[in-house]
Image 1 (cartoon, rainbow, N blue to C red):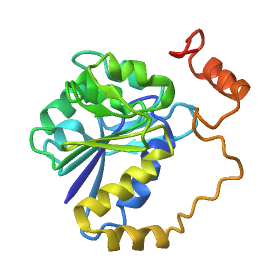
Image 2: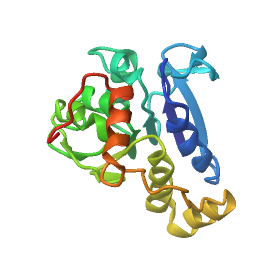
Image 3: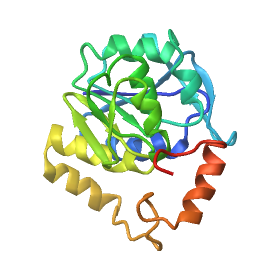
Image 4: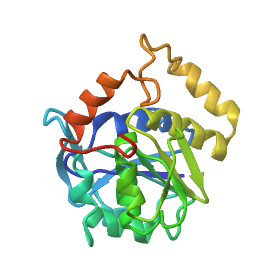
Length: 216
């Protein structure tokens, strides 16, 4: 079982590290980090640098493909970009093709969301809708073999759900216990429906300056 995580400059660290941590515990799984070219790939904060040893061309047919999100996803999803073309080609033979957060934009640019349900970060539902998706604010969405996760931390839940689907719930629960994934957040503000209006406005202003969410 080969699991490929495709990186690009400006990815959000937890988008890939969360699923990576879960998937590395799958017995016999080969986890491959890949990018357009080998060498350093830097996250959206400019402080985490990943030394990537494999190009997309090195991983043409993974069993599971995952694309994280991040501010760099806009450039990464440009028509003809290396990651979009890799996703489009590899999807033909994957068992599962997945994204976390705005990584869904890359899947959309590859033509994989057209007409199907999908999720992403709550502030970017309009972006995937522009790729023909039917946005939902569910945590994890399965549409055929395309799997999308909501914002950032949802990648952990996506990975557990994938493990359960592909390898069984017992393994998923064993990994969950092994990494002691037992969320007990100190605040109940992790979704736009729960956050105070002023907090939602602040996050919107920081993450998408000038953007007016639908219904506001």
